[in-house]
Length: 287
Image (cartoon, rainbow, N blue to C red; front, side, top):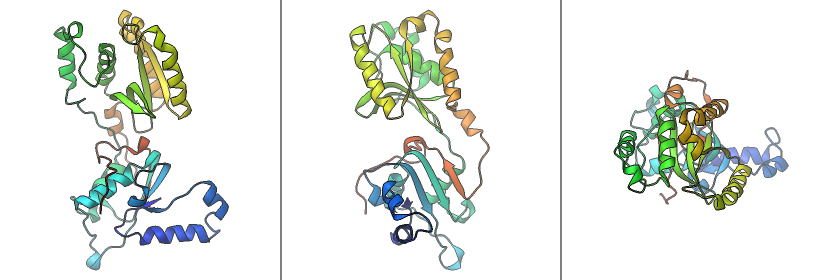
């Protein structure tokens, strides 16, 4: 649990209540579940499967809520929202109308009331530019643009992106690099592009061993072979769309049109704690 107040008094109070009162949780269970309570600084460089964020604060004199706009506030919030691997739950005592629109708390609450993932350029290359590279024949003459490892990955990337999904190329996870990651509010799917031209049959065993390691960490994989893709791209990717739907990973527009939840406690599954269009996680020191 992370307190978003400027001081650590709230965190210390909650931690003391949990540790010294069996009303909430036993001391044994507190230790067994490895519960931690503190401010963002205390979680720097650490992660938890589930993070509770407290944005509960009392208004200052006159009913106003202090606007947090300093760089150090943004860095602190950056760390806080990026500590969750699976779920981020926000508790708040203020509404958007209580907050200055320039306040970092306004940005966080706005996001949690309407969580979504955003599409963006890949290494500064827009989707239309990737299509142009293919159309102009660069596919047969040059290496693919960074960070792609093969033109096969570019082909599959474009097909997925055209469907409106957020897809990321060459994602590092636990010391391994995954060809493509399709990301949604409720999870992510690893897409591996298998082609003899790029990987070779000698690397297949190593790839599968890597996949098993990542699956033990909770990652789900979907694989497509180059021969099947280039024979009939639509048929080759048909199962992918079904898998994404079962995993409740939807195109960005679908997520943006979802009905908002207005409860005071929001369970927003910001996968791996990465609300990428809200804040950029930083593990640098702050004061």
